[in-house]
Image 1 (tube, helix red, strand yellow):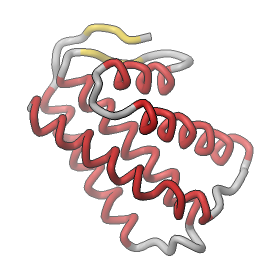
Image 2 (cartoon, helix red, strand yellow):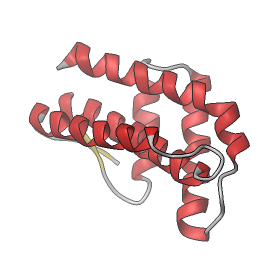
Image 3 (cartoon, one colour):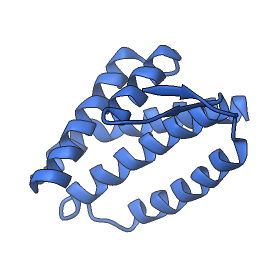
Length: 132
């Protein structure tokens, strides 16, 4: 569920600081050995960027399907393409299987999807700069 809240630019800025730490961590990891961890970090970065956008706009995603609703809300913002939305949702599913069922994410996933994930991150950051 998406609820209306008081816009919170300061919390969004704090989230951006955490994202920077995660991005620094990504640089230290090996794509062949740490592909699951890297994919999970990409997921967290994208989720946090989406959360920051909603916070700035005075919205928040809550409840059981919070991450699905977050993706749906961002898709309604027309910031990223439908294809990019599908990549995010696919990453959400892979991350959940990894976190809850111990399934590894292969390095081939990163080879195929990392350029798109980076593009999504860039677009979401640009949107944040625009609305901050």
